[in-house]
Length: 113
Length: 454
Image 1 (cartoon, chains in turn green, yellow):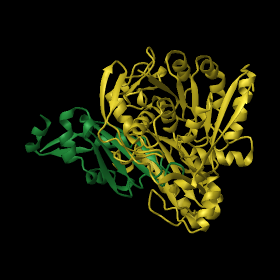
Image 2 (cartoon, rainbow over the protein chains, first blue to last red):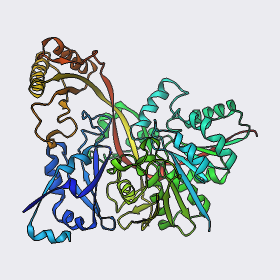
Image 3 (spheres, rainbow over the protein chains, first blue to last red):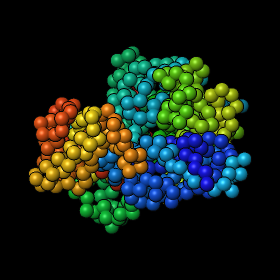
Image 4 (spheres, rainbow over the protein chains, first blue to last red):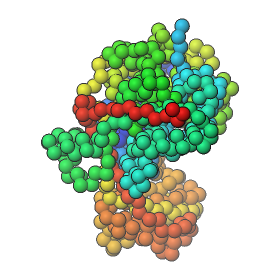
């Protein structure tokens, strides 16, 4: 098992629409993308944010750009105008996600090469 | 080969308006598109209009008239913007007055207005339309009906195109989408049909990439450490040729940069399903988009596919939703984190004692966990200072007022080293936004033209 922090693998950017936060995750190098597809699941992201995300998390993929988009529902305290969150638009969700540590099976490290 | 270049003038109300001057002078563009509106902006402006019938538009448009319009008129650059917001007529009055003040003698202003969506929502509610909430599926808008302050709809590029065809120099809309101001010139110039889905998708791709100004050319990027001259970021320009090829670029010599990372970050910015990006004119599939850096700060982008326009348009219904009371103060080393927690215990007890009626209460340690909550790491107990922040959302203003009152007492009753609270901030009123859909046949746009010098 090898632990790799997402910070070393991706760029990320988040934004908001209503009570939905979305986080775009972009592989820093093409070769990281298969690892992300396997390990950075919607469930992993939902578990990481825990109490911050009251609704479902969906993952969409843009393979041509080695990118994925996580859509986090009911995650901004009701939306920017009524949220009690300091980060009421979730602009920093993309920075929080970089703390995720993926636990990668040795057998999968070849995916990076 | 015919090429059309459109510059982004602004990404939000309050954005820097100077980069557009650079674009007008040196960007070789035929159009400038200014977006001023975020999700909460229209209800705020509707409220301002209720107090003052001459208000309700984005006053920054006057700075555009003074700083950019003369250059545009000289060079034939057309301006498209949603600055009209909740009061496009007053916006046009303001543009004309400001233009006259600086000696402009000929000007054609196009005003694109949608029908009264608030009246339409009322009418449809009476007929039993439920307006399900897009965020959570809630279909009982009726319980907030007496608290609705205003409604708006995101409308398409159709009115802009009509006004361009009438030869307008500056076109304002109430709430055409941000992308529409970039799509419209392309439809107008290339004669695209409203069912040329793949072509319209190129226009939406162009619009989506540049409408937020600096956000695709070096602003809020993961590559922030490497951005050249971020104090002078050049705003993006979309260039489309008659073959439908799209390039994103900026004025040489400005700060910022445009590359595969900044554009990919922005391609997915505030998008949900990238396979179905819904706009009034076309549904666009971004999932096959490709990019190539063909020169410095010049990226070719292709691969968007279009699907027929949706049967519904997105609408927002704003209603009053109580009050937020909020207050901050600081505690310092030694034991700053422990002091912050002790302060929270005191405040919780005080809230109980004064019987605070709140829907939700938050206790944040700024510097520790205020942005990322439980996703934050364990705090460093030896940290030098923590700013504590307490906020509560209450149905009644008087209840929200208790928050600051009870917290101010910490200056006298809290742990030693409590400081940094200047006053007792007043509660603020809250607007909630109910995002929903409305059948597109319920929405109409009208175009009116007003002129100086006719």
